[in-house]
Length: 492
Image (cartoon, rainbow, N blue to C red):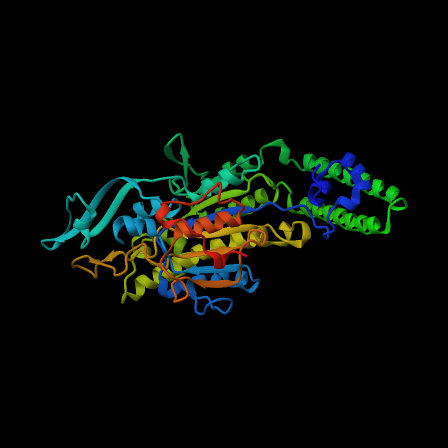
């Protein structure tokens, strides 16, 4: 048996008989058993409107702008961090800032050059829009360019799941809407395969809670069994109290404290993990009550993480196909098509910008709802922390801004300066991965204190380290030229 206190306390009652060797054990103060870390990606399309997204201020002294205002409560609790100055460097390098939504989705979580490219170019020709055949993306820099292809590797959520899976019933849960397509990819036998998403709340419940091991009675039986072992350990230490040295009595008191912390952790786990009632009805994430159904999905996901059914979740939300009246009921500024109007707002068009800002706020409200579910009093774990405290909830997107090309009314397409994947990608995270990450900060990575560009591959590698993935397991992430280093200021 290891001489570490942690291994000692995790042992069975029989291991407690090793107590006469207390003087060989370290004297550090007892603490509860390590709590699981969770990795949750919250991905949405279309980038953002940077002028309404990027916070004012740097470090701990920052103020949220309009799009992020739904996150104010999370910031007030000191559990929100925003990372500014990161580019989607793999896409930026592969296409010199040109690109499109399909291209961005392939790069978004893989940080890899995409494969098997094909191009679609719409240009202003003879007074009208026309699709023009092209053989290279550079031939469409003055048009509306779409770049299609295949992902170049596994996505960060799949990689972290692969390296950190402890044997929970689900290695990786993927949830989404809109055809079930995701940006999550597994690499299997030199092939890269898209992971399909669960698309409705009933199927999500069944995937998470249909197994008997999550039954409340079974959980209570397990808790009582563990409590019985602890009771026996306490008895063994009571019997030893009068037979050990004063130094060992100090150790015994430390172990008493540790056992009490474990007992409190068991009670917190009992409160945090209760199987919810099975939903019923038409609860697809594409239905008219889509936002209420997404809220239900967030509650189910939070319970699954609390019950340790899974530790890795990927969520893909967007509003394509949602009835316009439904969107208007959320914000009166939403007046048009959520994709074209929402992601291609250009300077000077106040109505489009307001439309885009309102749509992005809807997403931030969803992010805040999920974060609050993970951070609620119902999700308390040992030591008074919450599931969110022991997690990384990462916000990602497929581009910096949808304003890669635009045209004002009838006229030629004009490329946006800076490119679609340039610095300012809308990354933020909630939680600290059990104290591995700094929180309550606005990290500005493109000021004079930083040399060179910071890529999203480096950000993902940093988060993998926070999740416990070692350098030996994952020396780089994505394209090696853009994913070799971690961003040290984010790590504690």
